[in-house]
Image (tube, rainbow, N blue to C red; front, side, top):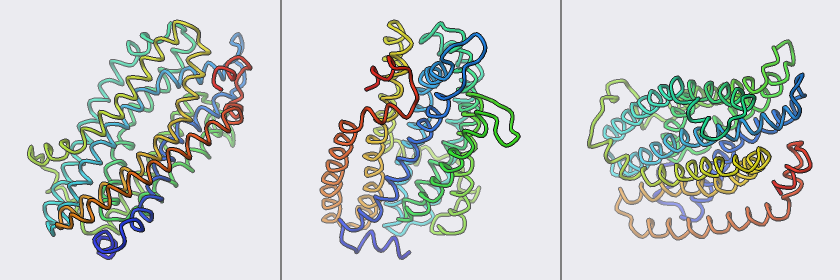
Length: 367
């Protein structure tokens, strides 16, 4: 309980910094999955009869991106709502109530996954056809998105266990899990995309499998750390029984996070449709720009997710002065992070675009 006590006793600005850095790193690594996939597929060699195969592959990943963002939106939003309730319940000493909330969070992640699984089998092709008619791009996008969606349970469940660890102040553990998953993705991407070390050359399918493998590693490490290092919260099956009051409480908090990130998904989808009527290069350039921009957004989201358990814990404890301080320092820190992000993107727009190996025209659009 030492880390919990720090949320209730240590200097608010110091606690927020200690908790925020690991969470920001975790969220930035979440954004890295799509960046890494795009970097490697962009450098795929041309296949017979198809020029600029790598750029077409990036286009395919861009068309898939809104659905991946939507999965993340539901996972993070549900996790944020659950995590806030957990921190508040632990702050008031209600460990059994916290365990029931955690169990309902797991239940909700499974339900959300089943909905996306139905979409994976029945909705991917119609969804993609609204954005492109290029059969080469559609084929690659369908392969990539089906794998990422059908095996999206690891991403959703990781979001839940990540927030369990963060709700008790153990942000370093969730970051360890995220780092291990991201490193797995970075290592396996070139191996599975290009067919290295005896692996078959899988192209965009390899990028999808590497992404899912990284998410699976993060999930496995997170659940092990939850069981062994976060015993304030029990995840016994007896706590998984759905409770409408708890579910309502989770989404009364988490729905705003879901809506905020889902709107980003719908915006990207809409821009893909508009740019798709112009040229494929515009879609590719926008996809690259948006994925780079996500580093800044997700850093801000990381601060949001570190503020939530701190504020919720002290609210549950009745320390309203610390609640106000948490909100104040959260706004200050978020403003600083966003300004730094904007400056970096403005200064290094061209070097960032160059790492994808795009054609000159597409690179110019990206910058």
